[in-house]
Image (cartoon, rainbow, N blue to C red; front, side, top):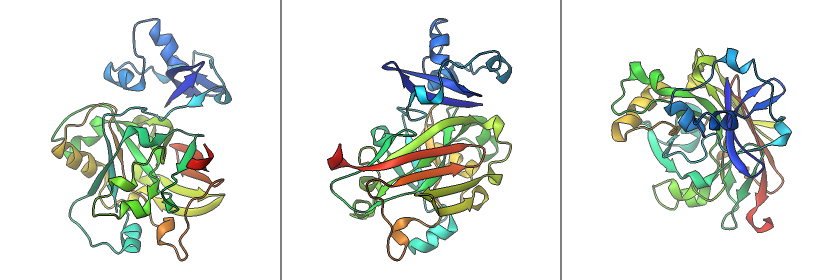
Length: 286
């Protein structure tokens, strides 16, 4: 099952993808005083069954709606750096016994089919295709063996980076939080649909050319480790997002470097999870 957040007729709502379009679960549940967002749906444990969804007809076609980030306003977006060996090697970073952690703010995100914005302050805007984890059950000090009990599902993420600002100091956040530089979507795929995430493949394409290509089995710190580690230094909440790291092949480490420019089309595709598409626009063109 795939859940989506979107705008329709000026109102934010959420729904489920089915063949031929989207069911507006927000509208259907609102009449029953139930969930208004995906987070509320997870909090009330009221996700409809696949059989229930199959009894509905789509309310909208995909072209009728404007997508929102899957979780539009997560309490926390925790990002993992240097989590594929090829990417660690291309950055010439030392090995570490712990995940590299930085944070994003929710207003730095855009949705599927929306513009990624290259800021006026830099010409070093880079792509980073990643798998995102959405937390479905909160907690602290979660044991690795229990981690999947706390995961709602997965999505695609493009952790766009402003490389020069990322390196102003040893702290990454200035390069990770320019407005509308990260993309999240198009949908949340419930974990029940993904028996083993390690069999998933991730690929980033720039103007149709493959620039990143890897398997999720190549993560240095696997998903149970990430959930456990993050839940130790902060209490995870329903709807929180953990972005698991990018494979090798980023534009900044190529010779010559390959940075995003206005008109570029970026796609992040993860098998069984989805295809996230965005086009780049200059801030000065808005």
